[in-house]
Image (tube, rainbow, N blue to C red; front, side):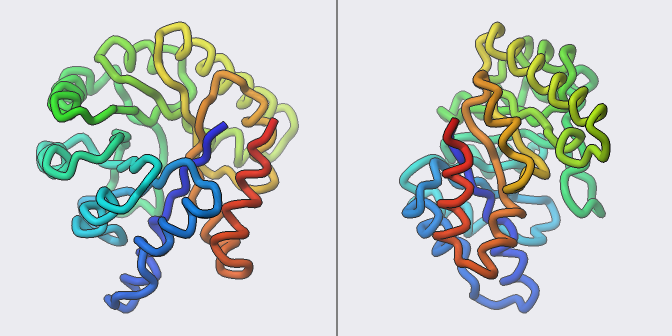
Amino acid sequence: MRLSVNIDHIATLREARKSYEPDPLFAAQLAELSGADGITVHLRADRRHIQDRDVSLLKEIVKTKLNVEMASTNQMVEIMASIQPHQVTLVPEKPNEVTTEGGLDVILNEAQLRQSIVRLNSHNIKVSIFVDPDLDQVKACSKIGAQAIEINTNRYATSKSKKTRSEAIKMVEDCAKLGIKLNLEVLAGHALNYKNVKPIVKIKEISELNIGHSIIARSVFVGIERAVSEMKALLEV
């Protein structure tokens, strides 16, 4: 299973002082050298952490795969059409949210999302959609032409009881199996950490995990190289 490391919070620390350090580009290089199979960033409308310049420079230096999370807006689509990252993940975005709160409602926004996918694909950008583990939403992703889905693992990761955790993992697994049947690449992520990742790793239909906060938090104490390599080791079945 591949690991894409989200480095947003390196930029969060930089922007706290509006300074030039710590540098997300250096973090990306260290993550790749430590075994990361991809780098993920979220270019938000409010530019609270990652900036346009970061994405442009990351496209030049990332040797594995650059995945950019973004809202499906005309402005963001045009920015990505110019930069041309390897992959874009369409996510919902609210102005005052601390982090992404849930998956996109693909059924409700089908027409608009389809337009974004066509535009991004025309620039050879692969499109993934961040969705909650809901079979109908997965079907809608296939219907509008997405190449991949990222299943939201938040409910599983934050479950407080064995019963709800078991139900949540079953929902993720069912959606992953459906995604494969529909010729979608299946990724997963959100709230995954060193303690809860193993059950997700066991779902063979999932090819890649996007993990950020847990890795960056651990790197404060042990360094990015060790934090990434430790997570990567947990992804071995």
